[in-house]
Length: 270
Image 1 (spheres, rainbow, N blue to C red):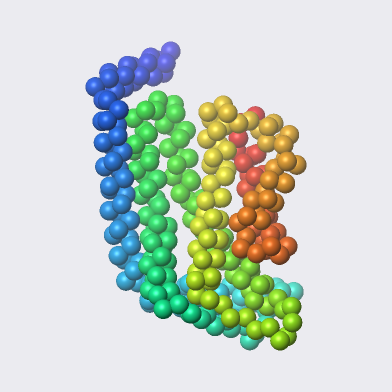
Image 2 (cartoon, rainbow, N blue to C red):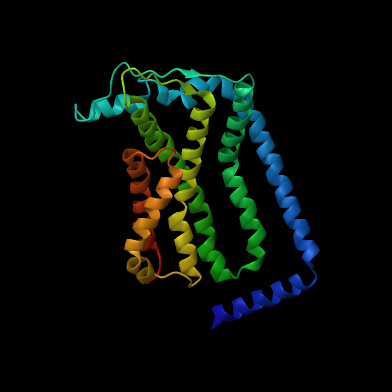
């Protein structure tokens, strides 16, 4: 009874406070939230733009060489089960005059967005928090910050697993010995940023499922009943995400998606 009374008091206080705010007042708050987010993104962009020339070879282009520690670690722990060619070394070429400069800018923006992602989440949370009740805040606050962690885990899976294996498989696949691969800078960077960012976003699937469950929209039996349909949908999504149509790359993206779907079943309500 005491808890219900506190919730009702909060609702009355919020209603009284919201009565004095018009649609344009809420829009003004949103405008300032977007402005602050843009400022944080700009600061991060300046930092990543200055740092990128120093980390480009060791971070962005790491998967093009057999010295990439993921390749060396797998060679060591697999005891010969997974064997990579020791002479793997891909040379990235540039065929457009402005590509290197534009790549510098676009890659800096992508890295800045990843770094500033927690602040974006914080601004979203501060914008919607006044409209929530105490019991809703108690459940949704950890979900927002857990979503940030899941985003970074997804980006890490994309960087350390999905992209290197996809790139190496496609580079070592040989249709004919007379065909030599020449990888354009724009093609490499496009696939690199797309796979990593997409993996970061798809790792939000359990969070989205949990939130829909808390709102009473999604239930555990629904996900279980439509598991076969979800497999087909996830295969289709993996085919869209992957930059190529080969089965290896498709399964490399599909397996994490399916694991996330099963995780979503665990976290939603019955």
